[in-house]
Amino acid sequence: MKSLLLFLFILTFSLFGQKELLNSGLMPGYSEIREVMIWVQTKSEATVHIVYYDSKNPDRRYFSEKKITNKEKAFTAHLLADSVDEGITYNYELFINGTMIDFPYPLTFSTQKLWQWRTDPPNFTFAAGSCAYINETVYDRPGKPYGGQYEIFNSIADKNPDFMVWLGDNVYLREADWNTRTGILHRYTHDRSLPELQKLLSSTHHYAIWDDHEYGQNNSDYTYRNKKDALEAFKLFWGNNQYGHDDNPGIYSTFQWGDVDFFLLDNRYHRTPEFKLTGNKTILGEKQLNWLIDALASSKAPFKIICLGGQFLNTAIVHENYSTYGEEKEEILQLLHNNRIEGVFFISGDRHTAEAMKMNRKGAYPLYEVTTSPLTAGTSKAENEPNGNRIPGTYFENRNFALFSVSGPRLDRILSVKLFDTEGSEVWTLSINENDLKYKK
Image (cartoon, rainbow, N blue to C red; front, side, top):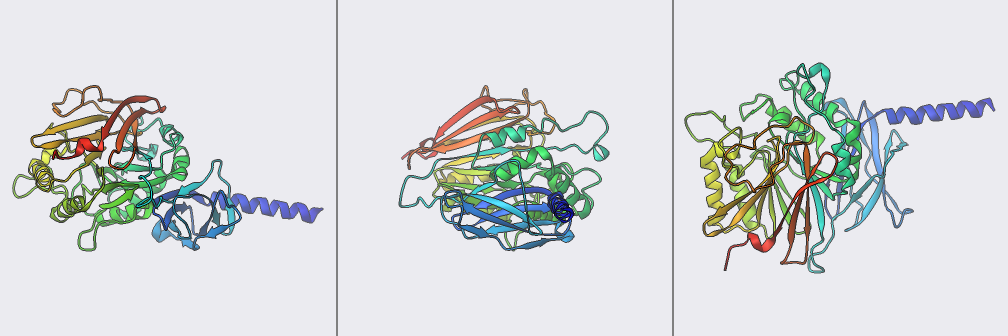
C-alpha cells in the first residue's frame, strides 16, 4: 500500500512538474494542405512534441519530430505536422519530456481545402487586431496602467475565426528592453504568457506583421541598432511561412487562404527617418516595394489584402500615416493603377482608434481600408483629424477587433467586415463585392 501511494505521489508530482514547464502556447501558425506549423514555449530546457489525429478517426495518430527547447532560442520550438491531409480539422496534444499536458479547452488546427478545379472556393473568416499592451508594473511608466481589458482575447476566440492576423504593436518593448537581445526576448516571453491569451493562441491559426513597438522604440526606423535581434525574436515567436528574402531581410511575405491572397508588409526594417529633410523617403524600401507590385500583379485572387502596420489611405498628414511619406504613397497608387491591379483592400493597425476608409479614384475602382486598433493598449482620439477618406459612422475609439468573412460563389465573392468591442458586441459592418474592386470593361 505504501509503495502504491508513493508511486501515485511521484506520478502526480511528475505530471504537475511537466505542466509547470509550459510558458505559453500551443499556437498554430501557418496552415497549408500538406503541413501545419505549431509553436510552443517552455520555461526551461525540455523535449517537446505533439501528437495529432483526425477527430473522425482518433485511433490513427501522428507524431511530430521531437525538439529540445533551449535558452539560445528563448525556449521556443516550431513543431511541424506534416502527415496531414486537405480540409481536415485535427485534435492535437502536447507532450513535454514524454508527459502529456492537459489543457482546459480543446486543441485543434486545420489544413486548407483542396478546392481548385473541384468546387467553389471555401467560405472562411479571420480576425484582425493590433496594439496589444500587457502590463508589467516594474517596467511600465508610473501612473495608470496603459494596458487592460484582456478579456478581448477570449471574445475573439469565441468568434471561432479560421485564423487571426496580428497587425503590429503585438508587444510593446519598454525602455529596459529595446537596447538588448535579452530585453527583447523578455518582453515577448512575458507578454505571450498572459493567461487570457492562451485559449485564443491554441484555438486558431496566427499570422503577424510588426510595427514600431515590437521592432524597437517608438517611431523607430532602419537606423535602429538592434534590428537584427528584433527580426530574430519575431521569427522565434511567430509561425509565418516566410520572412523577407535572402537579399532583403525583413518580415514581409505572402500567404493564401482559400482564394484570397494576403500580403504581409514590413514598414520598419527599411524605413527612413520620418523627419529626414533631404534625399528619398521610404517606408518599404525599393526592393520590397518592387516585390509588392510584382506579387500583386501575379495574383489572380478576387481580394488582395494588404496588411500594414500603419494607415495607408488616411489623408491627414499626422503621426505615421503613409501621407507623411507622400511621394512613395503616390508612387504605389500610380503603380497599382498603371498595372491595372484589381481587388486591392488594405487592413491596418497602429492608430489606437478604428475606422473604415474609402478612396475614390478617377478611372479606377475605389480603394478601401479598415483600421482596427487597439486590442488592449490605451485608446486615442482622432475624430477631428482631417481624414477625407473616412467612411461616416465607422470611427470608434474604444478597444476593438475586426472579423472578416469571405463568402459566395466563384466570381461573385463577398468580403464582409464587422468591428467588435471588447465584449464581442458588434459596432459596425461593411460589405464589398469582388466586382466592386474591378476596372470597368
